[in-house]
Image (cartoon, rainbow, N blue to C red; front, top):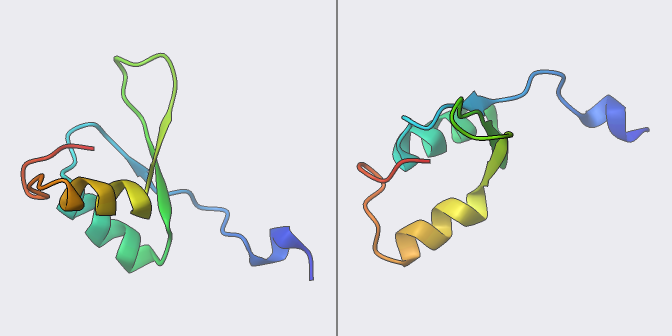
Length: 68
């Protein structure tokens, strides 16, 4: 088996207006551990990972108000 055979061709993308909870819900539904964040005001794309969400919640940030 080659890596490309196990990978998805559809990438989950989020915008800067998504909350961490919404991002976590979408990542869980699609069974992915990361999402690409596209912000028109930034020079390039970013990546949000499961670890980023865990770190944010561990730091006491509210997943319903904190934006990706």
